[in-house]
Image (cartoon, rainbow, N blue to C red):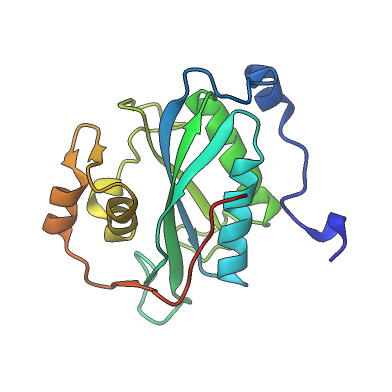
Length: 198
């Protein structure tokens, strides 16, 4: 593989670099963020791992934990009409403000040629900011926490695995929300494992 063929080898958006301004590698006063990943096209595991590595390579971001992998049926479409998703949740420490983290998430999606032409359409990668500290915001650009995360087992199950005491701001403990939603259609793939970046 030549270096140029790796879609994660790309410049960090200038606005992100500007806002971080060469963030202290020790991440002075970092914030907690929860990011959900999903892929149902191409080499799904390679894509998920590539997205995790790209997050770690972002100035001002450190990946602290990676959940187990879950396989789920696509949401909101006819059963069998799309490949199944692989989903995972990563916990970050970051000095980036939410808007800059969102820019980086979109840049990673674009690196994998994510196409946004169909609502609920298949995609190579979804990088969604689920929560950022205890922030509650109805900003249409970035609603926090993610507006439907408290209803979705494919987010709640891996999030609970990686942080059993977590809470969804404004909605309560992840464990209680997962108990209410149930795990139907969400299968933990013990044979698949994502790794923390070195």
